[in-house]
Image (cartoon, rainbow, N blue to C red; front, side, top):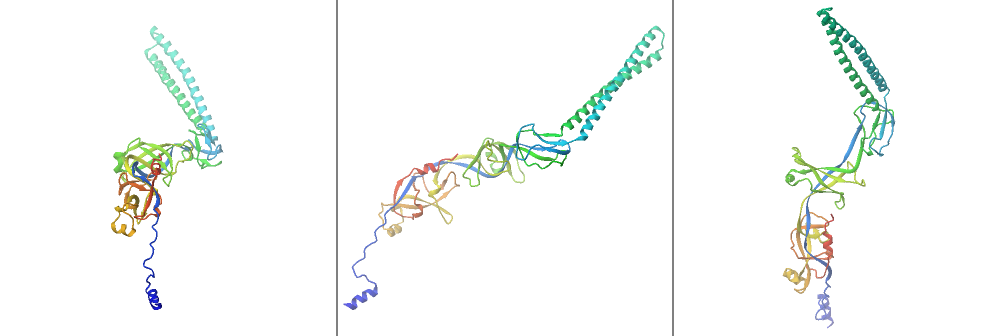
Length: 394
């Protein structure tokens, strides 16, 4: 008998008739939601640069040396506020010369007017004498010609006064150009000159910017030109795409397509009252060309394996392949998780549009998905979380 027991132990045979089965695992509790349609926008996604609607490049109207800088970079200024004062001594001399020219012209007019009165008197006297036979026609013609010449000279002198006055106004205007003022209210940009520098006429030295109204230039592919219209909604988003920075609408669509890039230029304006956005900032820009209803699944219910998207839906064991059901040893009517491959669109508002793989009314498993396998026994409870997850954030 001792030898028989040793042989049985060596063969690994149980000493009893059968071993007890492992206890069946309890169903895994999961939340489910019914697959329903949601609204998805047909979006164009671009990167663009913001520009201030009101931005003025400041330059002196005429050259001069900076005598005083009356503002600092970043200051808020009002329309008409002084920015720079230039030293322009030579312009004062120009005004004085112009004033002297006006005076000379007026004196010339007075002199010509006096001669005209004299020539007029002579002409009238000889005209009378001619009528009395005391003067010849030749003498009368001479005084008439002299009188007409003085009339022409008076007109030329008066025109000379007008020209001199015009030159005086120009000189005074140049003198007033020593003060450079802000044409609009806004914030002063970087100032490129300092006291003592020479500012040349027309060279920009700073800018005045208002960031409360911004625009962005969007280059839309030409194949979307027929769908690009004034009034389409446009969103500015942060780089992650989750936060809306501003909302506007297309205000301009170019009538022509760029021959090089084959892009269609569109502009959209945005209100920026708190100045969170700035001119020159690069932003993610989305244009909504339309919207449609599609079946939706929340981001949290999707798993990715080797580039393929999958979801779990609630089903019964009888839907499993027979070999898997036998391997799992579960009743045909038991609730199980069924793993399905799906084809999804781009993520929007924390949900994916479903292109293929599941149908309306399927009960999607939305919790514990990392612990699930195809055929895992589950205990389902309904959840309304998916409705909130797929609601538009706009």
